[in-house]
Image (cartoon, helix red, strand yellow):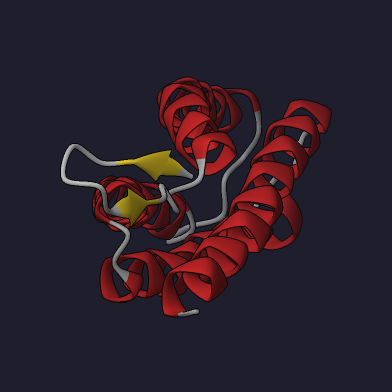
Amino acid sequence: MAVGSRGRTSSVLSSLPLQILLHINGLYYIFYFSATLVMIVYKSQAFSYPDGFLAPDLALLFVMALLEVPRLYFGSKGNLTEEEAPLGLSLVLTLGSALLCVYFLLWQTYVLRADVILNALLLLTYSLESVLKVTAIAAFVS
């Protein structure tokens, strides 16, 4: 606890580990998106992609990217302003991103070893973030 200039005590409840993980995840997602996009293009050239399967894989990757931006924004905003609502919204968006990550891990048309590694790492960071978000929300509420 720190003593403020007027004698009031104040404490910082925002989570530094969560903020660091959000930043790292933002950087990793740029790599993840690029690598996954390149692999989808590679798989479409190297393997015979069934008709009608390439577009949904690409569309889901772009939907995931669209979810990632507000997920990181609300996570960071909620953590830094110590507000539960943006952090809770980020947690819900994390669930959506995690489901899409599971799709790319298990159910996309072709799954390469590189896909497994990239998606497993992303799921790990989503899991750690979720635990830290729930912990931060609990700290903000109490």
